[in-house]
Length: 225
Image (cartoon, rainbow, N blue to C red; front, side):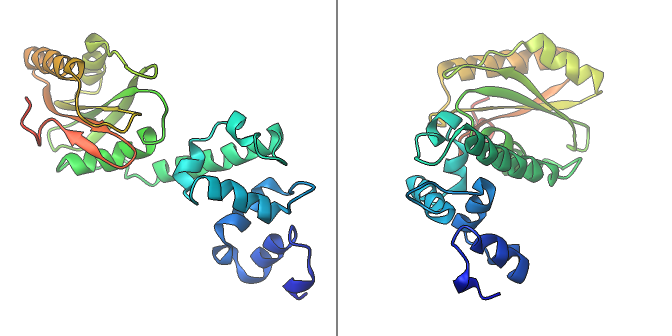
């Protein structure tokens, strides 16, 4: 069947079947997820409107809440949930592609491992990578789920997990949702406290990395501790 004779809502699905998913535009992919448009717009047109509002950036789209999405005419709660679920599946797929036990050579390696977890969050989270003597990641753990401005970590829990996994070193990581990766005075203080506690337990603190959506800050690279 010739695509030009199909209604616009049907074209993405037919195009998918005839030519493959890689031929679909971003708007067509989103239209398939939504399944239908509104009285004023086809699914593809509505998808274009939504994507245009975030400059056709999937990361920015993932930051929109269901309340943000339902502000678009033609998007109800069910469609908003479908969009959010599809984006979350993409995020989880990216996480599963990370090697099971990556080796940490530098701060960029840390950023690449934790970026999928932290980059798009609207709140702070504090994570820890636990390493063996070969600097292989043997475990990763989210230690706190904070508010908008701060996230406080329990040092006892951090090192209890390290001892349980026989880790010889740790790297601590947290995000700054504001995008400002400069460490606060509190960030510096907690880093020194964690380093001091690790020295007593003979578990070395290798780095503290602050992550935003596009950038990161390494305490080690900047010789802060």
